[in-house]
Amino acid sequence: EYKEIATPSRTKEILKKHGFSFKKSLGQNFLTEPNILRKIVETAGINSQTNVIEVGPGIGALTEQLAKNAAQVLAFEIDDRLIPVLEDTMSPYDNVTVVHQDVLKADLVTTVAETFREEYPLKVVANLPYYITTPIMMHFLESNLDVQEMVVMMQKEVADRISAKPSTKAYGSLSIAVQYFMEASVAFIVPKTVFIPQPNVDSAIIKLTKREKPAVEVTSEKEFFKLTKAAFQLRRKTLWNNLIHYYGKDEETKAWLTKSLEVAGIEPSRRGETLSLEEFARLSNQLEANKV
Ligand code: SAM
Image (cartoon, rainbow, N blue to C red; front, side):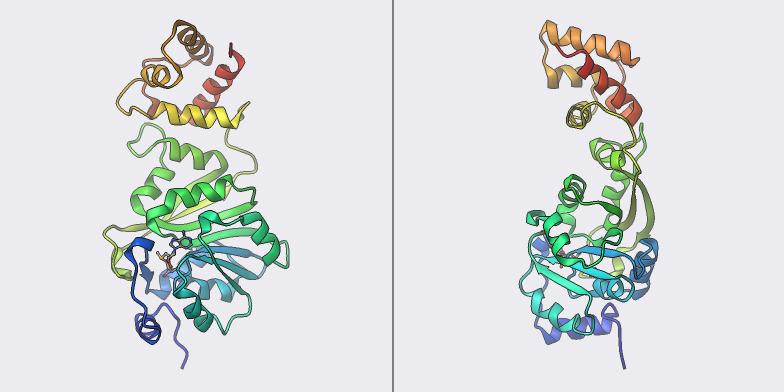
């Protein structure tokens, strides 16, 4: 009788067979609820014409569900002890490629080109190691991969930050960095009780869909992201204080900032977290246009 990997009994059996012990430092919390995994696959809209990248397959609980639905699955796993486990658990599936590598060090474009036989839409689906959620998200956004959709599990608090709207406590440079490229929403919440070992916090599945073009038009993406980081450095200070703190307090810089704010129609006394993406774009474009 066949049992899915994610069932608690099969998971325990696999861990025991391979003498596996969890490494907290690698963010190893394995999902043991097949229904949640099926819901993730459904949310991501995976079908036989989808290529999927997974980060951190663990013993293959999610990988199995992806393999059953996708054209091919490419999974990056850092822990060498899990490679023979995955060889065992993934043996029924011929469309899974496990790469033993730190995903942050992976040349994603090359590996994708070498792995996938067909040029199907590419999606990232993962239960992320929580200690590096933001670096992993940035690694994918900053790669030149054409990722159509990301459906990933993370700490609820980070999911809230990524999907936050202006003038909320969670809104910050991470919200802007992601929402510039992708439309973001929280799909559903996952209680900590369905993992072994149990993490300390609840999790959320976030769904990111690539926009046809970035959310706003900017003359320089680099300067735009610099500005959004600068605006949130001192959280309780005004936009003006953050700007002079970052760009400089000399008269020439102040005149440049004042003029740019004025033309962009943004009050210097506002707080950074009240500015929308459009307003940040307007200000960034003025800073570029008025550069001395
Ligand atoms: N996908 C499995 C599941 O849902 O049960 C395991 C998820 S667990 C939260 C995170 C996985 O990421 C672990 O298997 C861990 O070893 C792996 N991992 C941690 N850091 C990594 C990195 N830098 N690159 C690739 N995998 C990593």
